[in-house]
Image: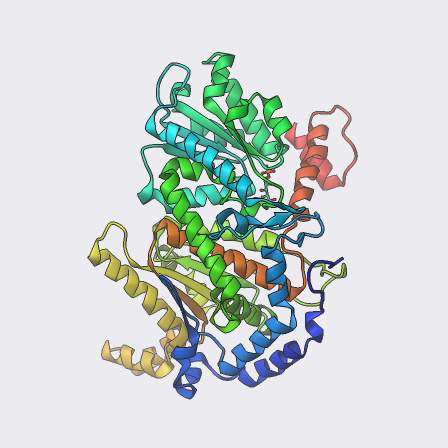
Length: 546
Ligand code: G6Q
C-alpha cells in the first residue's frame, strides 16, 4: 500500500517529538498568558482570504507551536500529497480511485486527467444538461402527466446522497425559488410516508440519488414511492416525474427512469464530497443554476487558496494543524462546531459525516494499526441555541473541547438589532471561554449583590470559570452561495490535510460498507421460519421482532 501518497509513521517524525516536548513546556501557560507574552499575536494568527477573517489567536499555541506544526506538515509530505490529489492520482488506494471533487468546481481549464483522458469537457456537458433540466422545471415549461407544472421535488437518497444537498438547501433557503424540496433518506417507512403524505403526484418530481444504485434504503424508498405514484398515475407518467443521479446507468434504466432524466456521476467523486456533482441536482433545482454556479465558484476559489498559499497563511492547513495539536498532544477527543446562523443548523451533522467517515480509521497507509489518535469526534449545533444547551459543559466541564465559532458579519434579511445581539453573543462567548472568571471577580460580584461573607465563600467555587478554553473564530462577511461553497471546501481540505498527517486513507469507508451488508443477514432471518443461530441477545431480538 501507499504507492501514491507519502507513507510515514508520524510518531517517528522529528517535529512530532518536538511537539510532545513543546506541549509539556506550554502546559501551564494559559491563552491569556500567551497574549501577554506575544505583542504581535494577532498579526500572525489572523488569516484573511476574500470574505473570510479567521482568528486562531484564542488557542493554546504560540509562534513556536505553529512553526513546529508547519514542520510536521512539511515532514509528512503534504505538498506532494496536495499535488497528487489535484492531479487525479488514484490516492483512494483501497478502492483504486482518484479523488476529484475539486475538478467539478475547478475555476480554470487546466486539464485534469483520469486514465489519460481530460475529464473537464464531460463535467461541463453533464452540468449543461443538469442546468437545462433545472431551467425547464423552474420555469414551468416541464409538465407533469396531467399538464401541470412541477411545484415539489423529493430527493430520495442517503448518506452522501442526502446530507450535502439537505444541508445546502436549508443553508441557502433565502436564495431559493418557489420549488419546495424535501428529503427522504431513512428506510424507516414513516419517513417517506410523512414527507409525501400531502403531495400531489401530478406536480411532484422525484429525484433518486444513489452513486451505486444498490443502497437498500434508497431503493426501498424509491420503489415504495413509485408504487404510491402508480396508484394514482399511469406507468407512462414515470418519465415526467422521476429522475436519477448515479454512476450505475444500467440499474437506473432498469428501474424505469427515462434516459434523458438520468444524470451521470463518476466514481472519482466520493459520496460525502459529491454535492458539487449531479448529486447537487436538488440544490440546483431549488436555487437555480446561477446560485449553484456561485456555490461551485466559491469552492473552486477556496481550492486555489489551498493549493497555492504557503502553509502558514493557508486556512485549511492551519485549522487542520491546530486540531491535530489538541487531538494528538493534549488528548482532546472531540471538537465542537457552532455556526451562529440558523441557516447552518445542519452543518455539524453534514461535517460529522465528512470528518468522521473520512478520518475514522485505525489502520495506517502502511496497512498496520496506527499507534496514535486519528479522526476527532465532531458535534455541534447553531448558536445562540447551543449556549442554552451544551455550552455549560464546554465552560465548566472536565473535558477539553476545542471549538470552531462560525459567524457572518452581515445578516441576510437585515434586522440590525438582532444581528448585533447575535454577534455580541458570538464574540462574547469566545472571550469568556478564554478568560474565564476568577474567584476574586465572583466574590466582588456577590458582595455587590449584598451577600454575606459565609454565603459568598460557599457559592464562589461553583461560579468560578477556569477559562483557557480554545476557540477558532471564522468570521465571514455574509452567507452567500459563494461563501458557503468556500466554507464547505475549507473543511474538505482540513479533512484531507489531517488524513495525510495521520498517515491514513481518508477516502474509503469500509465501516459504512459493512453496515450495508450486516442488515441483509438479519433481514433474511426476520423473514425465515428457521433463522440462523446468532448470540443469545441477537436471537431474542430477532424473535421479538416477528
Ligand atoms: C459517503 C458514503 C455513504 C454513501 C451512502 C449512499 O461517502 O459512502 O454515505 O453516500 O451510503 O450511497 P449511494 O449513493 O451509493 O446510495
